[in-house]
Length: 331
Image (cartoon, rainbow, N blue to C red; front, side, top):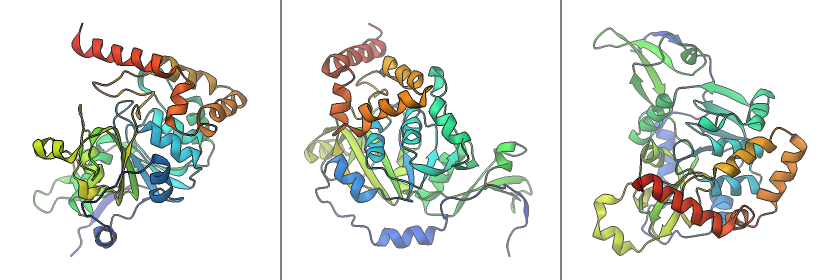
């Protein structure tokens, strides 16, 4: 006997929450302990497809896979869906490439204290993007359901809000207590990209700072691309196995990309390049200037290292490392 639905949002589900469909895909996935190291260009070409549902790891401008976002834009992936879960500069970059046309929206367009992205705002207001609304917590809970292998999770949030109205959630009466609860559909992204501090060749990952929903994201996603600051030996992983947050059997590709979170912040590694992030926001005000800016900084770059070289190179990175050290140590 199905439970009666009291209310439901008008939003569209961009990913099927059926766990059996996700499980069917999972059965075909090679989960063996094998060498998964490849270039970011190769990983993006092999595992990121037009029309996929894409999600990125990190939180705000912290530990965000920006090198991967550049590569996805550079390869001109299109018609994707995207999880706007506390996304800042990654959302800004993907908007620049018009990579997606569907967004599960929790936090987008804004770059926190830095202001709003003019180009991202133009793109979202253009009518080219279909939007379903959620809260940050709701998207995290949906990923949790995906990692659990179920079709939904019940929560006690969003009730009585316009966010619920424009979501795809449903309100029911709890069969145990008679109280109202919101059911959030599971989210199973086709592909995700997560930037970490260290990974071995098999895909065992460890990172510092807050995880937010990255562990759930890795467990819920069909394909997982890891970019890392450093490749480390498997012996190091085995020496301290409890430090591994994302295990190898979830991962499809490992790409060593030092400074892969630039121009964002990588906790305990380097601070965000606030001058360059401000340049993004400023140049976006003029679409013609922004087109030239993208050609210089993304499309004409062979890889992320060339992008960094065009924006200060090693001298800039050393300064950002020093700033992060001073802020973390209070020196």
